[in-house]
Length: 203
Ligand code: GAR
Image (cartoon, rainbow, N blue to C red):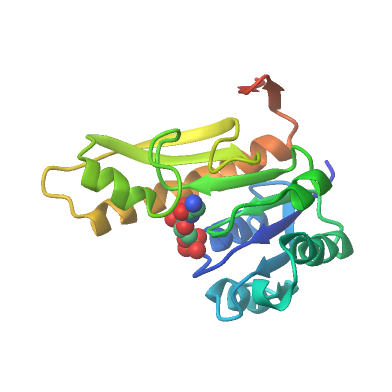
């Protein structure tokens, strides 16, 4: 089975990146992280990549005249490292047309809530403040909207009576680390079929 080259985009601490790298290294998914890109030069995700011997590229949005020019820089880094699937892992920017068109149907994202509820920033806190009894996390294909693309896999996390937003977020994160590698495995093994906006998982 061929090995799928992943490009991971991350803005912060990179714990989801780590779970993906660990799953690849353990041979649990037929993939490898070929490059990590960050919009934040101080992102710990970049350090995690360097520690694993993976190319780590960063560029600030402010250094570019337009979003298109910025995304061309990202595309260059992805193409130079022969990336097939782009994984957003705590990448805190809306993906634009330039990047979407360069990787059609080949960009996925993890979100810390049960979409379509609580899209955008701080999904865990939004859910806790709203008072839902169940929240969770979602891996989905990326489209032009904010966390609106076809859903690949979700995990449900109950909200406990004495929960805090932080405790809930920590339990959701555990599930993120489980389902993101699982979603990549489904993609890498050709198990995902897009039917309209429904994603069917083949046996
Ligand atoms: C994760 O909880 C991820 O779901 C979230 O950012 C965190 C990044 O953590 N993403 C979003 O909120 C995107 N809308 P990490 O850097 O440790 O992987």
